[in-house]
Length: 179
Ligand code: IMP
Ligand code: MG
Image 1 (cartoon, rainbow, N blue to C red):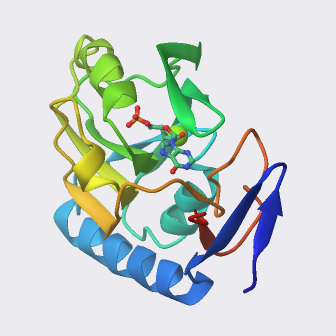
Image 2 (cartoon, helix red, strand yellow):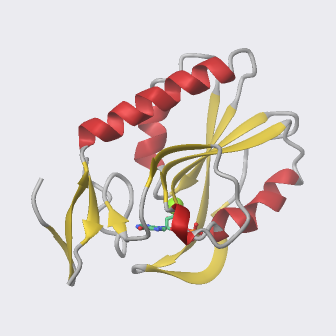
């Protein structure tokens, strides 16, 4: 791992592939236990969560389904303020145990805006699992149930996370370099 340059910014190594995969393995083991017999529906929030979802779901050994929605509120390194649903829910959520998969929770705005919509489909339960949790940045009442890493309030890229669409295709996670 060395310095990563994307457009006008420099990023330094932060979380390596191995420690990311180890945490995902632990999370999968926990979910396999807690959701045994419940046939959970994993609901992955695109785009950022696609690698996290793939690596986690491969290690889910109980009966389970996966579906995807696409929400977006980010441009560059800060939130635009508006949350849009670019691809909506197609799965039947009624009576299902839903586990939302997010790459990162920052302010919580994206999920805070989406949760009432999901609730209107009457799931049996909803829990939130995230790869990265920027605990200090949380500004909306969103409860994170499972977090692989609690991280400081600094912009990160890699392993699905992007800066202006780039950087998602890195196995490791990088942090914005301080000037
Ligand atoms: P929130 O709505 O403020 O919680 O932001 C959630 C979304 O913003 C995430 O799903 C990411 O797509 C994006 N995001 C937040 N922080 C970062 C970051 O540090 N790097 C890349 N994307 C981020
Ligand atoms: Mg995201």
